[in-house]
Image 1 (cartoon, rainbow over the protein chains, first blue to last red):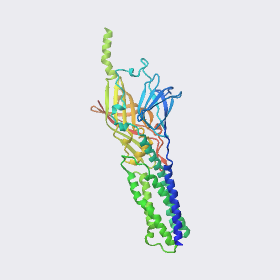
Image 2 (image 1 turned 90 degrees about the vertical axis):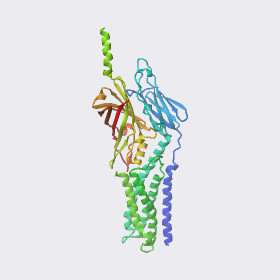
Image 3 (image 1 turned 180 degrees about the vertical axis):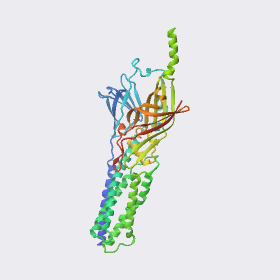
Length: 300
Length: 179
């Protein structure tokens, strides 16, 4: 009888874990596979007015391929390009040509890059003839940045996007888990002590199971978020991560001890042995979890 | 004869009126953005800006640039989020172009027109005041750029579902010296 109860309880927990694992894996399975990105923007003159028929050329710095687009009457151009780094050039009759050394196109994303063109000098219509004796305006090349600091990195941006997306879900699920955790703690009043009832224990166990499932899902989104190379962990996030070494094992141990306590109480015994640590372990786990949340909320 | 005198006078006076060509290089710099959230505030600081200025015919053009990833708020997680929302890997530099007249540049308070390229967007700010101090042959410029997230079409990141404020004033403190 006792064995059947425990098996049934473990079966429910097993099903919950499977559901949680599916929820965890869903974002990975739904990874996007689009092969092109879009580069669009508006070409304007110094006054901000749209420049029609401006020619925009994108040369792939990776593959050397060239694509061009022409701005419409509203100055807007649009190019569909394979992901990668591009050197861009804006040209229009009567305007100084503008070159942008590096822009990155990300797969399935629309990047907006506006072009501002200055009119050439009226007397010559030649950009170079603006003022022969005038020193050139400072350019990025004058500043001497290493190439790796000026070139866009589409792959790195995608990693950052995916990391932020997963951590945003981690954060939201973490809030929901906190609510479930509080509910489990409140319901523990009906599962232990003088007020303990069979239905109270059932309810506490069920909500506790949901909490554990939510916790695993929440943690998965942080654990599997892409790591960014060359980043040393600094600041309050270190405390947040360190506390996971307390509430992580606690979230595994608490349901196991809870199952033992449930079995003992259901058989009319007083909770004894290692099972008697269920409440204390659960409380420490909840405190560590709360502290982990506060560590990223408040600056210290 | 009068024309010759006039020409000689003009040759003597014009460099004074317009100023001789000069070039400036950015030495030390501190750029800091300020982010506000109902629960806390944070400041990201960069000391890695580089800059150059060219003055000619009474007009000075300055270019200042800093790697987006060089801004340090003391929290690596926050800095990575900042890098993501500002598309810092895709557009790794924030550049500021400043146009100011050479007469203005000698004032204690300089009002500059700025053009900032950041996160793949360009924003322009008119008549931003900066304080100027001269120390020997170095010039210290300090002021605050009233930048906002919406100027660069950046969605405000949120903490516990509460978004940060739109205002991200950028404090600038730079020391320039002639090249």
